[in-house]
Amino acid sequence: MSAHRDKAEAFAAGLMTQAVWPLFFVLAALAAAPVIAVAAQPQATTLEAAAWLVAAASGVVTLAVSALLVFDALLFWLMASHISEAAGGASVDDVLARMRVKPAAAGIRSLDRRIAGTQRLLMKQRIALGLFVAASLVALSF
Image 1 (spheres, rainbow, N blue to C red):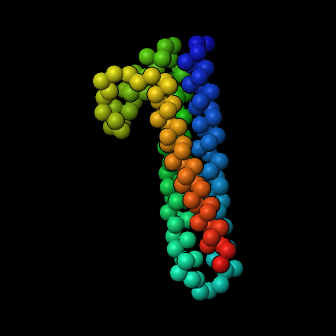
Image 2: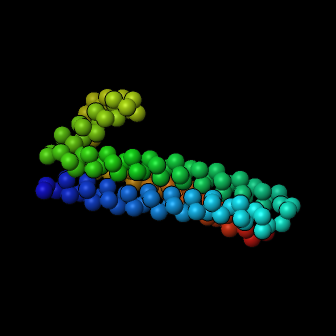
Image 3: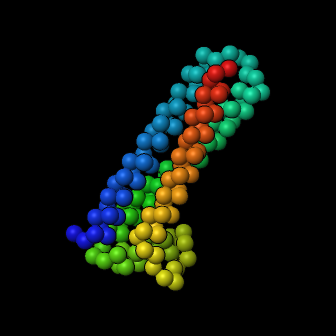
């Protein structure tokens, strides 16, 4: 295999892991929320209610970004399935243009630029997950 294929496959596999575990974590926490609500005091303070709202919003953002990361992982596997980096990039750009996610690209971005863009998305997921955990802990502490 070529270097770009190995790099794209390895990144896609790691990306899938980074996308899935927060997804299950947030879904488990949301599934436990009704039980927590029953066990909690019937009257919530304003701070507690605000913390629950922030936790819910950041949980939804975490789920949405995780779904985008799964999609990106699939695109990296598509890119790795081609013989050359240019052919893989063109294939990904074609898929995105056909899905009307992005307009047809004038030039093909390199694998490293695509990885850098996805890493920015990973950082947004981590921030949303951290906010979810922090807000949940604040809400539970009251």
